[in-house]
Each structure stands twice: as structure tokens, then as C-alpha cells.
Length: 142
Image (cartoon, helix red, strand yellow):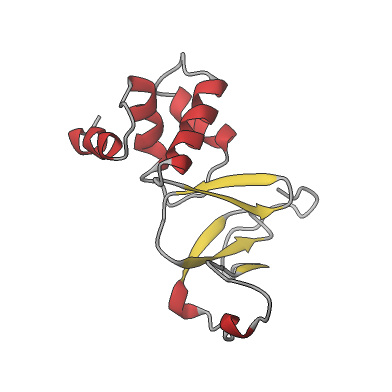
């Protein structure tokens, strides 16, 4: 485990236990947008005694301390995003994969013109098919 990662957790006010470091090593460095169960699956291969409760609690702590963003990009599907910079998302309908889209790649109208709302943040979530990407059976949607 990286000493930088341990320092990063301490700077966020998190005591870096072995389990938290294992979760952090995966979830803070991935470009994927994993669910808690996907994080559990990945990290359990390195730390077999890791419990589902520990993963959920650790992910929630990382969100609370500002290390991760928790997103609901599809109904009933919560994922975690280590990219804290402003960006949008694309969900491939064939694979279920979620990709970051640079903020400047999408032009959105002036949200300040929405009367009666104080907009603090927004993102665009696009769905479709990535051209030239792998295909999967359309009978199973994620």
C-alpha cells in the first residue's frame, strides 16, 4: 500500500486501517464507476476477510470526507466516482459501462436563467451506444 494513499486518508480525517487502504487503493484510482458490490468483489480478491458492511461504511466515509462522489446515474444503481472535477457522463446501453466526458465537450444553456432555482451543481448524463465498442446481449440491461 502506498504511503501517499495513507497520507491522503489522514489529510481527509480518516484513520487508514488495512481495510480502508485496500478499498482506497482500488476505488480512488479506478476510471470505472463501480457499485459497492463491484468494489467488494475487486477488493476481496486482495483482502478475503473484507465484509460487505466494511466496504459500504468505507465508501460512505470517503463520500462524507470528499474523496468520492456518490452518483445515481440509473434508477436503483448507485455508483462511486473518484473524479471530483466537473465532468459529464456517458452510459453505454450495450455494456453498461460509464465513461467520463470532459466538461467542455458538452454545451449546456445558461442554467442561471432558471427562475426560482439556486443551481449549485449540474451534470449531463447521456445514454447511447459507443461506436466501435464491444456489444453484449440486449436482453440484459444493467
